[in-house]
Image (cartoon, rainbow, N blue to C red; front, side, top):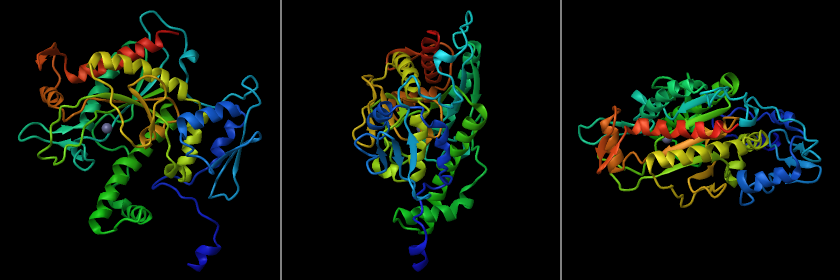
Length: 394
Ligand SMILES: [Zn+2]
């Protein structure tokens, strides 16, 4: 206890996050004006004064609290937009892509598809598994992979270069829950929760399939693939209760997420403060919203689904599109390029459940009096049409 008092204040860091390296912001010096910084910070990334006292904005620049270092990090602003230095990013916005080729509306576009979750033998552990009687289990991680695989030939044919963060069920990370038990116990202690055996087991699994896995995928995307856009594919659900006797519901909806809406308690984690600033400063916001707008519109048309409305939680709207929300997720904030994060269909909706049971098929089949293509093709159709609409207008 005595030793702790004389050591420097240590940074509060999320489980499995690397020690925050504030020099990551050095390349962004003088790349943004004070007005643009304040607008993005206050409206999108840290609304409701979430960064007050953590980021002090002056004419000289933004002073960012860095507990690990001790003294604040100073990010200097550009005097005006014309003299702002170029930001160092690996991705290209639509304007920077090469010219269109005939019949190739996605020419020159590098797309990374991230099929959400793990699926397969891991679906139960990651709580993305339910089953009704003897029907086929519903496993989100296998469904997202199915859509991803349908997208590869279609997007390639249209001129895009396509990469997957995973091409089979299972994890990319080499870490396993057993190796993460110590970190899991630390994380529980920090949250003031019980460190009984069962709780440590659960937490170590969560650190494996969420934190470790998503960090590994982000490393692949940011350090190897260098895409212009990441498509995070998910299927949504309402609370289903018992996985062996799940509740089926009438609700069904669609929404897309862009990165933003950090809460105060999240920004107190030094790694999250740094991640937020990297995302803000790399200026992926405009492109992220523009592509999300295009995909939301074609997904809504393909699926006929109404927009999902959040009732609480740290979320904000970013424009007048009812399908789009900003939210801070590990699975969108760590990708340092524009991300389109898609959440269509409630898997435990009665009709959706029936469509999942039908699997993939040619042509149309009747569901609730409506002839429909398979749920997987409908999802892929919506994504492809949105990307074509957006990138063909160069
Ligand atoms: Zn999901």
